Image (cartoon, rainbow, N blue to C red; front, side):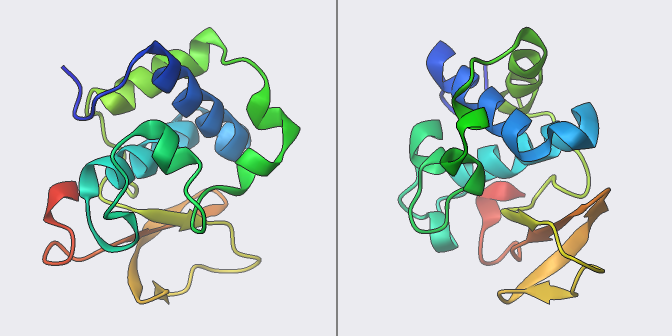
Length: 140
């Protein structure tokens, strides 16, 4: 049983998002993007109070993912990414994205805070940011 509800199409959508946002970061980077997406669905807090499904999370506007504006996102999901997406939906977490709700790719180092959220760490080119447990207990 997953930590969020997801049907086969939802899993493929998350897989496509993970690939489009972090394919160059390898499996671990894609898992971290999946962690952020799953956390947004399960969180019910801050910018994601009304996000209850993978499609709502992926296409949230404003605040969604840049990848949805690129044609690469709309290519079919591959088995590899589908397996990774299932792992995140089943609750597998990777530090520093384990409790993160945001990530971005800075030109230089990771700022200590980004939009009032604390840096959880960096993996390759992406910095991850997490809310406090008081602000968003469902991601902890």
